[in-house]
Figure (cartoon, rainbow, N blue to C red):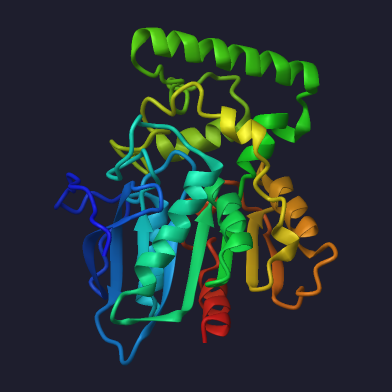
Length: 330
């Protein structure tokens, strides 16, 4: 067994959602292929027989496991699955330096490492493992499903394609000249950071909220900057990612092979979300020239905005998620 690094893990219940008495909860750690130790919350049904189907959950981009990924994990554990919600490399309670960076490769590997961990648990059936990705980790979950054949079912919730939004801007408004200027600024930032010996942060969700802020910014503020979703370790709630975080995403499209996914995929988005086009386009790309489409589904939630699928339990289709994973992790 590969040795994990020592991490400082909290012992108190510090989630943004109430603790369920229907499941057991404990902290666990596991290591990815790059030697980074990841921290996770494990949720387990208190009563079960035999080996369990398991689900790894991560996201949103800039969130921590104490926020909505933990809510999803706890809810799915109440429904009979063993689940983990983990912090990605370089964030939250997980290891990795420098802090507050992201990578389409390393973060895909984080999901695969979670599957490694689940596969060797005594009470888990390694043939019945799925993943849930939220927001930016929705896109990364599809990227992982394209490479990892062990994942029998994938749910991408209110997803972002982080490669696309970094390279093209929102609604693909960035042309090649604007992209060049962005590259230039980010590479100048690299020199500044190297000279200073530290990585400058770009700031989390804007605070105070400008009156003329676009709706999607108000949507994020209502989650990350209020008691609804604020967490002290969340990048979006506080100082944000470092300024150069977008460089690798700009240069590395992450959904290139999603039309080769053979196992089951459910993509869920609200029709009022500013980000809904990511899911619609990803679904279209996934089923194009793919003979394995009977187990692929796009579910659009009428009236739902982006962050509704973070934590609004009356809007998140948990019954659908349960039936989806029960069918394909049977």
